[in-house]
Each structure stands twice: as C-alpha cells, then as structure tokens.
Amino acid sequence: MSLAEVCAALIVAGLTAYAVLAGADFGAGFWDLVAGGPERGARVRGLVQRSMAPVWEANHVWLIFVLVVSWTAFPRAFGSVMSALYVPLFLAGVGIILRGSAYALRGHAVTLGEARVLGATFALSSVLTPFFLGTAIGAVASGRVSVGAGTGTPLAAWMQPTPLIAGVLAVVLAAHLAAVYMAADAKRLGLDDLRDGFRARSLVTGVVAGAVAIGGLVVVHADAPALSAGLTGGAGLLCVIASATAGGAALTLVWAGRFDGARVCAAVAVAAVTVGWSVAQHPALLPGRLTIAQAAAPHATLVALVASIAVGLAVIGPALVALYRMALRGDLGEAYQPLGSERWRRGDTMPGARP
Image 1 (cartoon, rainbow, N blue to C red):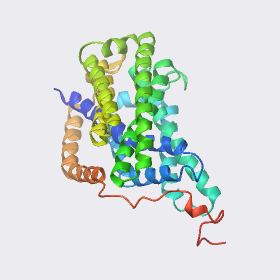
Image 2 (cartoon, rainbow, N blue to C red):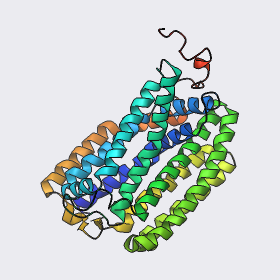
Image 3 (cartoon, helix red, strand yellow):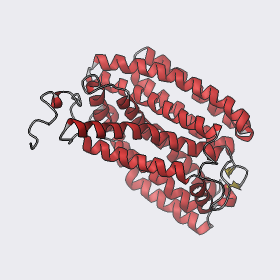
Image 4 (tube, helix red, strand yellow):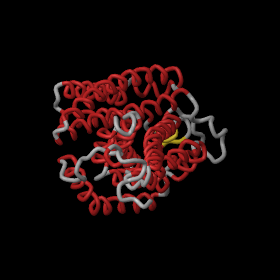
C-alpha cells in the first residue's frame, strides 16, 4: 500500500469515527428538537445534556483530523471540494459553531426566552449540520466535483438526488445512533420511562434508516451509475451486507433490551456505510476526475504527514480511548436532572438571577 493510499485510509477512518461518535451527538440534538415544550421535554433534554457532556467537544477532533489530512495529503482535491461545495460546508461549519455555543450557554440562560432561543439553536443546528455534511459527501461520491476552482454554480454539485438522499440518511442515522446510545444510558441510570421511550425511538428510526438506505440505493442506481456499480459488487457489496446485518442485529438487541450490544451493532452499521462509500469509488478520490495517486502531495510531504500522525496518535490516542471507555461506563458526566422545567416554575427568571 502506497503512502497516498495510507493517507486516504486515514481520512476514511477519521470520517467513520466522526460519523459514529459525533453522529450520536447530532442525533441527540434531533431528539432535543422533537422533545416538546419545557415541561414535557424536560426529562429528555436532561438525558441529552448528561449523555453529551463528557465527549461532545472531543468528538470534533475527528473532523479536524480529516480536514488536516485532506488538505495536506491531497491539496488539489481538497481545493476542488471546497470550491464546489463551499455552500453546504460553510453552512455545516456555522451549524457546528452555533450548536456548540448554544449547548455551552443554554444551561446559564437567565430568562425563559433566552433558554428557548438557545435550545432551538442547538436543536436545529444538530439537524442541519449532518444534513449538509451528508450532501457534501454525496456530491463527492456521485462524481459531481470537478477539478479546479470556481467550476459550476454554488448549488450545482449538491442540490442533486444522490447528495440530498445522503443528507437525509445522515440525519436519520444520527437520530438512530443517539436513540440507541441514550436508551443504554437511561437503563444504566435507572430511568425506566426514558429507557422505554428511547427503545421505541431506536426501533422506529432503525426501520426508517433501513427504508431510506434501500431507497437511496434506488436513487443512486438512477443518478450515479458508477457509484451504484461499486456498491453492488465486490467489497462495496460486502459493506452493504455488513451494514444491513449489523443494523438488523441492533434492532433485535434493542427489542430484547440488550442496549450495550445494540450500541456496538448500530455503530458497526454506520461505520459500514462510510467504509462502503470509500471502497465503492476506490481508487478514485474525485470520481471521474482524480485518482488517489493523481491527487497525492509530494512523497516527502506524505512521509512527514504519516510520521506526525503516528506520533500524535501515540500521545493522544490512549487519552481518547480512556475518555470514551469511561463515558460508556458512565464514570463521567454530571448528575442527571431534567432540563427546563423546575428552574422556570416560578416565572420567566431563573431563581437567584438579577432582576
């Protein structure tokens, strides 16, 4: 395997980690959005707050990793993607910033109005960000990114059937991951009503995700024949089968109330989607335009990049593994409490706030 192939594999690994880990965080925002009013949704929002608190910042490390490796190892392809897809990528970036800011601030809102604005910003950004990121990936996978800057109109590459169905699938998969993860958290905390509620959400979103994925294959077959051929043969087909099998196993385990195992299977199902996309278009980096070898930076640059990644992973990797292990065991995070009910019960101003 060449160094260029190694760098491409690292990008896929980073995207997979981001989809599985940050995807669950985005999905938690979806459930925050549909939880209901301050009283009705207080318990759900409290669980969202507790489940996200230990890892939501660390999860975005993977997106930064992907960006750095992409622009260093494949600058020509990176520039082309940013030129063709600056609209969805800009909107996704704004969504990440607004979402993080609203999440950090909404627990310190002084009035009910402030809390509602911050909560709505957090929830809407959690839905729109994975959608726009999904459309960007769909545009690349369907071969709509040309080489060079300033090619095409701002909407031409991503306002198409395959990118749009990819965006919808990203939102649904994120919601499913979050439901499975939070069902496990609720069970560990002894919150039986929330456990049952997220168990039902897991089952519904799992079925919806399967339907969207099947519909997506039909759309891709008509809209992006080359990508369809990669997904229905060879390693791409194996990834599709693996995703479907893991997704079915996750639903079975959720039905049986075995949420820890369901969490692993749901993560594998999502990981198989991202890996399947990459092997379906291999060896192309920009399908129909650039291969991995053609887009690669000079050999010396790739050597320095891979060496620095190895050193960085040796230093940061154990800390991230420890963080995620403790988060899964429930060793981290603040005590659970409903968010948005008790604090407002005496009026529109928080108890103790300045008049």
